[in-house]
Length: 289
Image (cartoon, rainbow, N blue to C red; front, side, top):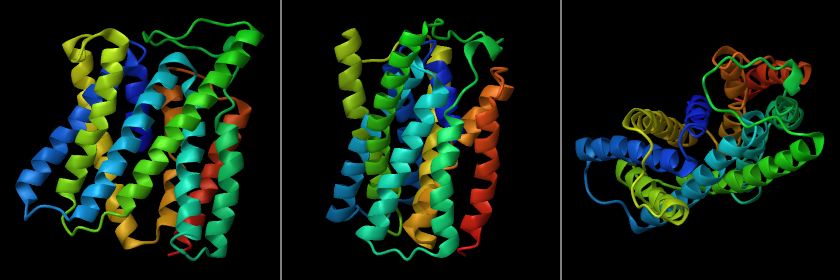
């Protein structure tokens, strides 16, 4: 769900300015969490849970803003893998160093394989070998110098997005309420605040614009992303944080596959290798029990 939601909102960000998509996406998630809170409310969350929810929301707002802007301006196949490896590596290290999670041999091997898999997935085919029959507006072709600069921007935005998502994921794993609906709603609402401020800074408007159909799709995709967050939260309650983070790191494989199927792009040889390594990582995670 992480991969598909990022891919589809990345596509929408090429039709409508990214902050409009980001705000609507987060509001769609807030709507889902609001319904969940009303259905399962059994008292307010603790102060500690509210703190971690707010931290998570700030990280999510930063991550969404940087990722969607990166997908709008640069190649999705570069921005998403960089975001993934940073957003996974930081909580993974925190789980081992701060929380003392035990690392078994298969999981350690999976973590090592994650690096070349992510790097290979970020090596797209050259423009001359890429076929794109989609109606989506794509960035114009660039000279080698312009491409290098654009990739540098993609890496920079990916690093910022990864830091934001790392903050979000680690903070969510610290929420301990038996019914986490209210903290999740708080987190989602907090994430909207920096996005609305950025929207106003960019456009002079407080409300998103760009066509009801497109913005509705963004809200729907935001609901899908919210479900991914719920799945992640409950996963961290069943097992240690480290294996969950390694499993999440596989999500860049899905945008690559969707680009192949939906946008009619062609996989490069390195990307095929990256998908092959990703296929090995998941069974290794399962061996940890």
